[in-house]
Image 1 (tube, rainbow, N blue to C red):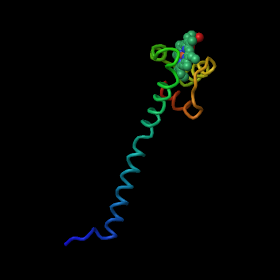
Image 2 (cartoon, rainbow, N blue to C red):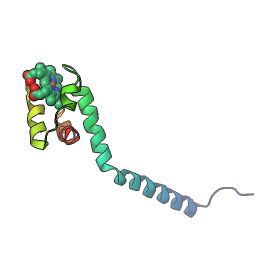
Image 3 (cartoon, rainbow, N blue to C red):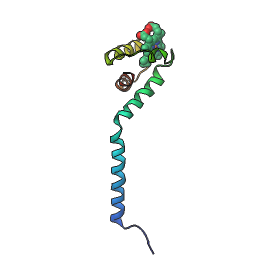
Image 4 (cartoon, rainbow, N blue to C red):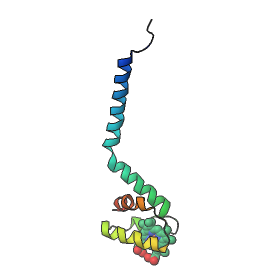
Amino acid sequence: MVTSIAGPSRLLMAAVLTTIAAAAVAASPGAQQADKGEQAMNVSCTNCHDLRPIQTQALDTEGWTSVVAAMVDKGAMVDKADLAPLVEYLV
Ligand code: HEC
């Protein structure tokens, strides 16, 4: 009868799973940042207008930083932590 997988094998298994998980996270830091930016845009930038004015602009980092700052002046709620990913996503 096979009672259970022996201790050392289980440890190895856990180590392998942890490594795979870590690799998966490391593989997509850019994608995660973009997701965060997209979410921030969908939450913060659609209260007053739709996405049209955003989609029809092609700006660089500086340009979007000042547009976002202008929108915050108008009343847009953007979390400080979301500013960088948001601007990166918009660029
Ligand atoms: C409190 C309301 C409000 C929110 C929230 C808001 N906007 Fe705007 N946005 C406006 C108004 C009003 C205009 C149009 C006229 C103007 O420029 O004053 C505008 C215009 C724009 C334009 C057109 C170009 C320009 O500068 O006029 C862009 C691009 C834009 N918004 C991007 C954004 C982004 C990105 C966000 C999220 C960070 C956002 N908006 C959130 C009110 C808002």
